[in-house]
Length: 503
Image (cartoon, one colour):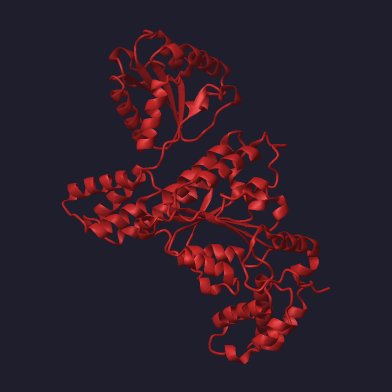
């Protein structure tokens, strides 16, 4: 949190009149504000909320502005101009749409420039009317880092008199990343109340609380990925690229001088294994998998979408190292032109793309896209991702590998009874998802006749499926031409770019 402390002190010294801090951790941020005030000449700190008015500062002022936000601001004007002070207003975002409050804030912003006073609004979210955007400065408050978490865990352990071994302590601290200090304290209290000390089993408590936190954001989903790299049929170039980076998040890699891998953009038609690859990466690298539904970022209120984007970034970085999976990113940012939504899409995209380019945290972003024409050019520039891979339709050997992967799971004991060579040959232009659907249909055929499904059943099922390659020829041809022009690396070793699609 040292970066936040330094930034806050700089804003206070620079006489930024009104600072807006979005956070749910009131107690923790107020402690940081009071520490900053102490370091800047023991400034007085006044704390106000709607229910109790001003609760700290001069005893004669206690209760001032109670249930009246306008009076809370007028109180600031009554104090001597030369008196250094910081005014903390809790939940004040709820009153910013009021014309009298808004006008008073703009007047204060002008008057406080010449006074040693600062006004700090603490809110659980960013909600700033357009007429106040020029006078408010947003300062992000980070979740607790490893050092803060370790200090808190050790403090509670000292109170119990039951220390834990360093390895478990480090693992517990790492697991707590991404949670607020209040949630961490609740988990520790629950664990200690259960058996009087912290144990390895308590890591499951942390994981469940983390899932709950992520669910409450309604932006990210926590995935328990079980897929393996071996579950991906074909795509050998892509798999080799991933396997070479398996240890890139280790401390040994940092000592070697390697930067953290940034991420991948996987481009190709639906059903070719892009989403499966994202899941397999997280499982193979033993990293938590977070799925971002970009559509959830776009909320109804102006300013809320940008707030959700910053919240998503903060949570992902706090959970790092992790894999952030963004499915069908082309659908989310296809309208980056600022039309029809007050420029919300453009601002969200700007925040996101800046983070992609500048992030130093070990968040490995895996974005998938079906329609390259919908993607903004900025997203395809070097530096956003480590690599862009084109995931095309599987060629015959890859289709054979896909059939083997599925049949080895469905019928491991009788896989030799299936003519996989023939199946691969007879399913040109089928994607991996279509092959899987073919097998499911074949199983229905066999099950309805009280017998096991056969190679002929699979071929019959395949004859009833019209692959996407035949119904979306133009889109696929465009993708193939785009990849053939050197715009992306091929995920497969054998190129099928020039292969004619079946009629």
